[in-house]
Length: 544
Image (cartoon, rainbow, N blue to C red; front, side):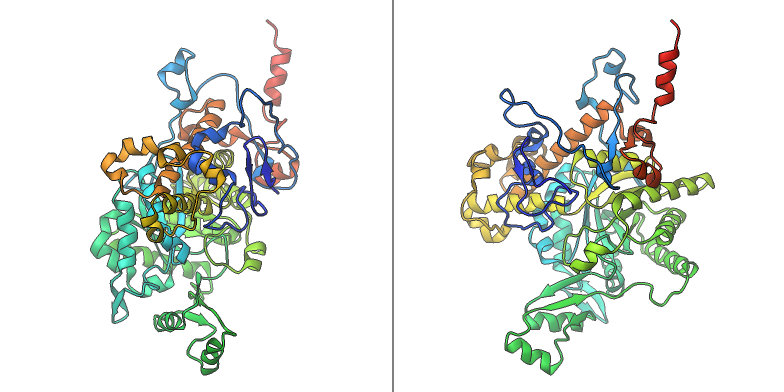
């Protein structure tokens, strides 16, 4: 388990930290100060130990046990350069010359400035509250963001005719928040689940946003093994969701439930989505159904299509890779257990599914099997507990050459929370609009300053990108997002420079090693002292 505090960086978790370093329960009103929270303001300053000139520091995380990304080490080398700039030829290369730009896609390549993406933020209310900040931040940074499932279905202002959506103000808002700052890098990705397909969301998007979005078919996520859920406290809203065809638990139409609601013995209702593919019995049938779904989207005019799969076992993983490759999809996101951005059964989140590193290692293995048979392998994005530059490097290297992006969920939401809370204090008139939770700045923030330019390390960089006029209305959460991703990007550049790799395309599995034998066995990585051992012996035996 990750340490609860890091004295070197001056950060501390309010709750118990997960492998990602985030608290297992991340609150939108948190006053600090985990590493991700603080990096939303401090940016790349937080790469280094605090109080330089007055301290020494040493690594605390060297007790590698079990199997996780923590039991993988980044190797590094002392000479050579791959895809290096001209300066590398003369021995003058700097880590800032490492390029983090990349592309993904089958026929149409989508450009991204950083190899990150924000995972699906769907119908959960916390995603809706902080969407503008997160979407604007991702667009300014040039990275994709996913509008998750059921957004249209739960939109009380949406209108439907014959069971098909005609108008969805919430979907329009979410897309426009991103597209306002989109400059050709990154993408808005919209998920479709069973209900979305039935509700005609694809047709709605084809009519209004066809060339502006990537459509994502959804098989699952790492947080749970059932459909999406939200919880509502208003019985009239529960009735609305039931009319839309969702399962509402308990059933708000039952007289005894309504009486219990009146007496306050029932205070909330869970809305559940349908389970997919329950009418199919073999992977061949799944393939046939999937091909039809992709063909339907192609006929609507969508050129870019992706697939999101969850922490299922090896058969479903292989099927996802095979079908995504066969259908020339643009991206396959593979989400390991057990993170989540919304409402998932806690016991299920804790105990179901394949942990990230094991799932990701197998994904790369299966991709290689497909490539050996002469097939082109779909570009992949790995998700599940990523929040640090080191783990991002490991994920990209583990899945190379197929992994193009690292998908983050909760880590991408924290800038929205923090920025909105700060904006609510500094701009009181905006407090309700941005869902700010604070009445005053906590000490961890005020220690940095009392104005936005003082608080956010990336303030003037964002202003340079979008201009002074746009800066007047840009959400503070977007500035926080830029500051945090700049820190992650700089850390990734440093790890890559240490490996003498100056482009993401040059990363490979030799750049990482297993820190124990069990990790080596399960991931296929070399054990840390076995890698290069033969070359080392040749050096020792060489005659000059």
